[in-house]
Each structure stands twice: as structure tokens, then as C-alpha cells.
Image 1 (cartoon, rainbow, N blue to C red):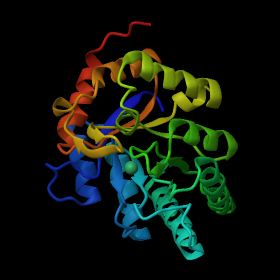
Image 2 (image 1 turned 180 degrees about the vertical axis):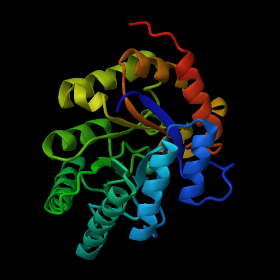
Image 3 (image 1 turned 135 degrees about the vertical axis):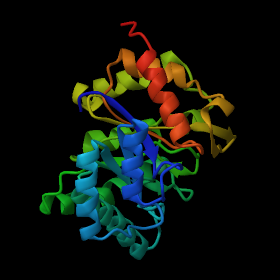
Length: 279
Ligand SMILES: [Zn+2]
């Protein structure tokens, strides 16, 4: 990736319709560089539709990623739920590849009362199986487990980076709002750069050159995230985050998930573009 691109999770609200194609075309009109296709309620796009999406996105110069369905739990008790979860990851990756998306993002699991180490081993096993399958299919899409915002959800920074070190084809989706909500901290320049440094040390500079980031304002309580907010209505120090990203010359996609979607995506992009680099 040549630089850091900004875009929305799903079609911008001001697009003609909420369709992926209208979303891509309107993202380009707004001057945004990327968009995440939301398959969060299921992958309903067919192959023909995906080919058309790829064509439109290339023409519009908008980079794509895809968000897998929410109904994934690689630590489920029932084998059929594990199979279905793996299936949703595979299905998202297959359609995303046809769309020309380079990454898919997913919420890996819930602990369901398990010790984190036990959940980790289970997630690693079943995710590994899904990655093996994609490899057999020659699918090159980056599979990105997300840093999660609730304490009941598998997905601390450490868990996700551990998985990425152990499994081939895996890279992190760094949701800075989630991590702030989960910890109540991680809201300063120094804390943001500490994560970037950790990624560089553990996964290599190439990972910072191809990052996938989620940002939004966020409300939270003792159990972590409660809901997404617009940036200006939350305590999230997005300018500090943008400074950290600029100083570390991070490249890739920044997907905004604030309720006002393109409002905050454009705010992030404009702010980033006007920041001086201090390094
Ligand atoms: Zn997500």
C-alpha cells in the first residue's frame, strides 16, 4: 500500500442507496480512498455481483475490504457452530477475493467462561483449518481477526498478535476504539505508538506498511464497549492516533465506523493530511 487511505464501514450514508456499488461510487465522489463491504448479516453477494463490484472499484480508484458476518464463534461448544463459523470466514474470503478486496475482517470468538489460554488454543486450531482451506484454494486475501471491545470477547492485542505470529496468512485488524473501550486506557500518543512498535517488533515493518485499522468514537463501561459514537462526542483522542500513524508512516486502510460514517471518515482524512510529521 502506497499510503494511508480513509473510508467508511459500509456505504456512506449520503450515497444514492446503501448498495455496495453506489457506496463505492459515492466514496470516490467524496474523495475517500477505500470502503469496507459489510457482510455482517451474511454474505448475500453472488459471484456475478462481486465481479461487477471489482470493476466499479477499480474504475473509481477505491480500495476494498470486507467484514465477515457477526455470527462467528470459533470457540463455540457445538461442532456445527464451529463449522458454520469457518464457513462464514471462507465464504467472505471467496467473495472478497472476486471483489478485489485484499483483506477481510472478522470477530473471532467469545470466551464463554473459558480461561483465555484455552479459548486461544481452540480459536487457533479452527482458524488454522480455515486458513489451510484458503491456501488450497489459492485464495490470497489477508484474514484479519479484530481487536474486540468487550471483555467477554476473545481478541486482546496480545491474543491477536500471538495468532498472527503463529498462523500464516493472518494479519491484525487494529480497532483502536475497541481497545480503548476495553482497557479504559490506550488513548494517548504514547500508548498508540507502543502498539505500533509492538507490531513492528513482532510481525515486522511489512505489517505496518499494510495495516487495517478501525476507528470511531466509542462509549464504554466496566465490561468494555457499549456503543459507537461520533468522534467529537466521545473521549477518543483521534488526533493523537493520527499523529502516531503519521509518525510511524503506517500505510493501509483506515475504516471509520462512527454513526455519522463519512462525516468522521472525512474528518480523519482531513486531519491526517494537515498534520505535520514530527519524526
Ligand atoms: Zn468489526
